[in-house]
Image (tube, rainbow, N blue to C red; front, side, top):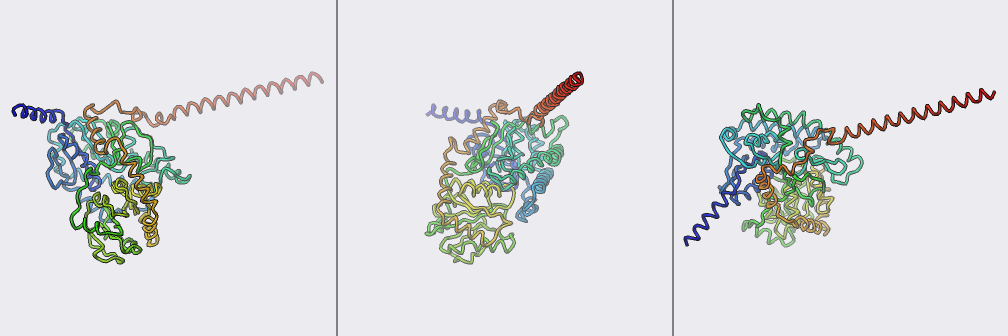
Length: 523
């Protein structure tokens, strides 16, 4: 018995001895963003690592090894400025307007951080961290936490790769087949789409340093004390150790990444499905003809849609009166074609548990990356109604891959959505393709959460993992794209061509002159 006690004490001591202190900064006041980062942190906390999370959300039940720093004003500000209009500020814009609008949103988020007393108190208290994980959704000023605590930085991207993250580690962006996050394209672009996509990337090349990063730099200097001797934010960004991407090649588009840019899409997916409530379980079990799940995410409020758009969505299921409908809505909604007993409206569903049910035949979604990922994981076809940011690209990719149909909110009509619902439900290929892609997604050497945890620990263990760092982040623009080499080659070729032309001219002139002189002598 005594030996067993000693052994258990040793095991406990060993776990704590080799545990890491990890800080996660998850400032985006959107539940989907929080779920990604918090899932990763909860997994690390369960392993015995000490985790501190800065966010606008609070866990309902205390978690062991999980300390929270609450951003007390973020959620209210986010809902007041961004959610109340369902993201209309970002809709139907040309790339330059869209990019600058999102940069302006990043400026708002940065300024909200200055008014958080909890955040200031935390910064001004001594802490030690082995690694800092930052959700870099237009909030690069928070990368200053790595400098403040002298810890390596891991950037977490909640929407896959973009210029905000590829520049951190030197991953290339080929506009010929890598669609910009704001463009509703796939990797098969037409000539004109490639022109538009290229212009989008080029505009961001100019706008990011002069419009976005300069503002983030100012806020970082105000937020953190003693920044006088700090490197610039641009230099801090170039010293990020690793980027974790909330995507997977089966969902997005295959593209090249630097060694320290890792796809971990699906970290929020539970390995054990949470049981449904008895009411919902019975509702779905008795859906003999199948059920349709409608959820436009955490930021879009159905009842805040224009009346015409809401009526179009609620009228889309008239051809399937025997299918039961589940709708996530902040207020009660009536489906005219269905009996009240066949419609279940709730302000929040456990989406994974719903999608896991065998009777769900269709998922009507806004096209958020978490929703698309979960639809793929559980093998459910989708009808996408994207509103803003990467949703259009995600929904378009679901259409390209054959498990969904995309209808952007600005083109939504009764005929289009009714046709889409009928097509996805009646043609077996959509459900079959969803199951095929689900099988591919699940065929990974490690579950996404395990993979993400591995890389966080790898960076902490290896003091920033400098062996993964690409020299591309240090190269100036002209070297990175070999502009000096091409300029040199151009000059050499130009001078060589001019010299050749000059030589030919001299030879011709010499020959011509000699012939003239010879003819003059002959005469």
